[in-house]
Image 1 (tube, rainbow, N blue to C red):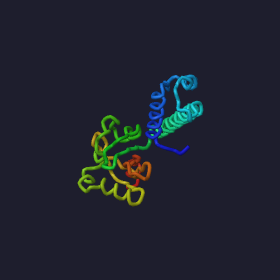
Image 2 (cartoon, rainbow, N blue to C red):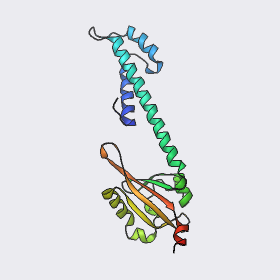
Image 3 (cartoon, rainbow, N blue to C red):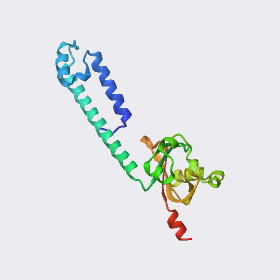
Image 4 (cartoon, one colour):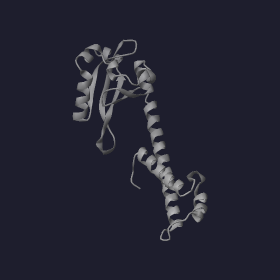
Length: 196
């Protein structure tokens, strides 16, 4: 079966459920109900009702299994995202608006996900970097080169500076559609100050 997006699977499941309901079959009743309902539905003479019902039932089962596999994959990705507590991981849309913020970002920078979701990622850039348009420059380099590395000062919630080592990378979806960016950074203030 061709891999698809969660939305594709959801749409196909909804379509199949509608087909079954139009045939007078409640898709929530399971395969047994499908088999018994097929006996009471008036199918055209040239249609093989049992075969069609079996195929539809199998398709629904495959789609449900694919949806479960996708949910499991998403859960694993979320677990990885949240377990990287030494690394701030910030996801943004294409304009730099924060869409996701891991527990590492809270630990490193002080803001909670609730405080930062919907905010511009410039918020944790220094005033000098904001004035210089550094985030736009970083996004452009990431799009051009696949990543933009940086080692410079950033801001915490309490306005204290910390030396961050990190990268920004573009995020792409299906058909190479640019979705946004991920910025991963680590607090290296101690190492930076020790090396001065």
